[in-house]
Image (cartoon, rainbow, N blue to C red; front, side, top):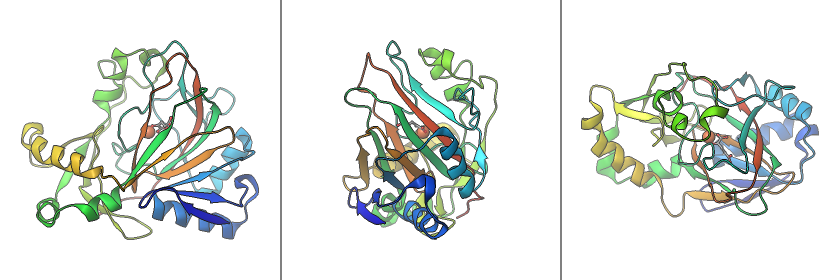
Length: 275
Ligand SMILES: O=C(O)CCC(=O)C(=O)O
Ligand SMILES: [Fe+2]
């Protein structure tokens, strides 16, 4: 198995391994690479839906996302889908999946099934590198702070997606979510400090209103994206990406209007997170 960095501080391309048939030692190396680098990319994979599910089960539990349409034949697989006549995509802004859950999903295994002729890349940003790069006074200011996260303003019947042409494709318009997490968490496996707020789901600091929180939140959001902490994936048929939601933010680039894109996603259960 060979690991090649995708960017100085985020992402790794892994070659010389078949996900569908890898052994337990390779599995452990893959997990460690993802925990450390945030996202791992595998090319030229033969990965049927059955193999996708079997691989996910070797990792741990599968979380069923409340909102995405499910693959009818394989309900463990969510569809991240944009039709040629839809303008809005799923995940088209920097975010961390499931931070609105008190035990957030560890990450996802995303498999390219239908790709546009060009575009439709995905970007990730490493929140360990983001934390390290914060100025000392900002690090001191956020020490011990907690924040409230929810997805209600995104997915509910009066939320952001309902006002777009993705609204009709999504489920869970009545689901209520809410969770409190430390602003700086430690990765459950590597112990690295990670900035754990994100532009999509983090609403306010505990003990402060949204208005009071916004100046510092905005400062953190701006500081979280640096030139060196991001990587960008150009999908090809057979590409699989596995990412860690604690370690990274991601952003699905919506630059392929008029073309279909369909990804199969399995969401992997996580563990409790703490400062
Ligand atoms: O379609 C993509 O590249 C990623 C979409 C997304 O945000 C997700 O699957 O969580
Ligand atoms: Fe996402």
